[in-house]
Amino acid sequence: MIKVDFYEIGNIEDKKLEFAVIVAEFKNEYIFVKHKDRDTWELPGGHREVDESIDKAGERELFEETGVRTYSIEGVYDYSVTIDSNTRFGRLFYAKIEKLDELPEFEIKEIGFFKDIPDNLTYAKIQPELYKKVLKYF
Image (cartoon, rainbow, N blue to C red; front, side, top):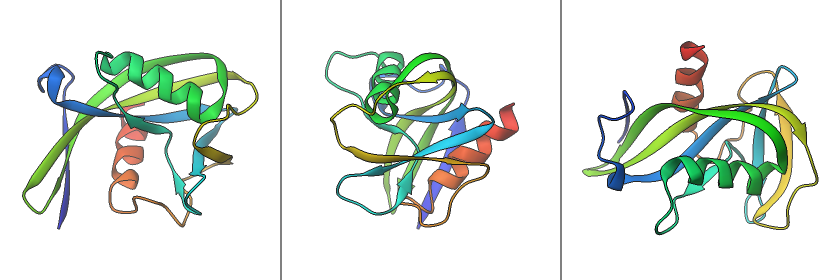
């Protein structure tokens, strides 16, 4: 069983935040990406690096996975995902993209633009919850 919960920013200890996930909007569409090793769509995001703030992780992941150059980004919620009895935490961001550049040579092979959440998601029981929560926020 998978359970997703949301928290106001600041209610989860910073050191527990492992992931940064970004709902990124560009020209009234949302960006989803395909990892080089998968054929499914996912929101941009990833793991926080050692000695990196969670906010910097969000900015870094957004660039690495989309090639964004001009944007605004803000933390919206912290969240947890519990699978069986294992709970992990992350921060959910919203980014408004003004300008994209070439996709950097990292782990993403393709970016897509969607009016709504696409079918064929990598994390189909988690990412729709994150996506919907950001849309409700705005």
